[in-house]
Image (cartoon, rainbow, N blue to C red; front, side, top):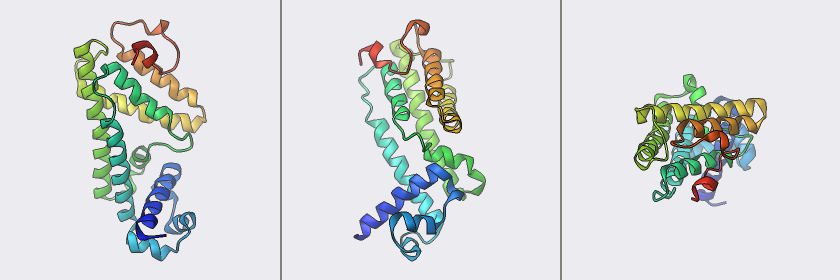
Length: 206
């Protein structure tokens, strides 16, 4: 393996381990076994575990940010929210959001890592707030009157749903929360008469 490939594999496997076990649930030895290298090789790229963690967070955040910016801004706000929710529905069931997992480990994180996790949350909260604001303007979503607060409670609800769905090993719990979110935010529609699940694109034509 060349250097770039080794580093990328270390980051990818570290991300999976964190999403399954948490930051404190794996060691460099565990990571070395997954990648097939010696622990000394990991220290070459990431002298301390915190260096590895920051790199993993940065990689994960950049990827998610790219996905968010890739959601077609010409769609209605309601359709954009639907696409956003679908991202979580397609995630591996045995892994939760990297930064959601790290938020639970906050007492073990460095200040640098804590700020990186906070930045990840703010990206989602701000994106959701912008979508809700747009939804009020185009008439497809409702708001409490404070879009920033709506963005925060919405992302918090999604993170909590992911955790409880994994706890109970029941994906329906995740779908139920998504359904409640869509009913809560839908403007001018009777959510009780719409299809189950989160495929609002079927209703909006988007």
